Amino acid sequence: FDLQCAAASSDAQGVTAASAKPQGVFWRGHVRLGVLSTTACAAIGISYCLGTLDEPNRVAMIAIASLALITCPMIVSQPGMRAFTGPSRQRWLYAWSTSLLAAVTAAACLDGGARSPLALLFFASLVFTASGFGRGGAVAMGASTVACYLLAVTIGSPGTWTVVLTTCVLVVLAATCTLTAGGLLRSLQEQQRLTEKLAVRASHDGLTGCLNHSALIDQLTVEVTRAQRETRSLGFVM
Image (cartoon, rainbow, N blue to C red; front, side):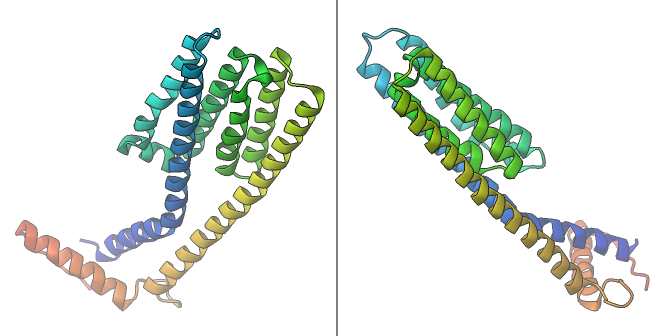
């Protein structure tokens, strides 16, 4: 039994877990914010449709909102949270953000384009889509939101000044989310690097790079406890 290798492996796992905690908290919070935003947007859409049932395309709009509601329990489930907070979270977040933006665009276009009150949901969609990415991703999602709003304008325009003002507000909001999200992500990454350095210094000798006495005793305690629990012998070579 190579105690040095086992201790090094355990120490590496501890470093990973400790350094990943701040980012894990951030991503779990972002997913919850997305679920809250999606639920609110879907509830607003369904309420609006139920209040205007005599207007066209209400069945299709309710179906879109209901589909968004159905996905929320799947996202907050244990497998969903693992996917949205794990190593592949960016791909899942891009897919979710794109789907939410597409749903808002489809609902607005079915209700008369940018004249529809549902066009205001572009703002809620933008806050979620732009706040969870780095600078490049936030810019891409912000530009996509503005493009989708302008697409709704082609279906039905509320007026030139309204379009100009709304577009400007969307651009400013996208820029704000970009700066905020980018700064927060950089801060989390810096915190991760600092945590890793501190964990290594706390468990390794600065001159030789070997595990220090404290780390050795900690790992030996773990192995002795495991041997007692499994009722087997334990060899220690020093």
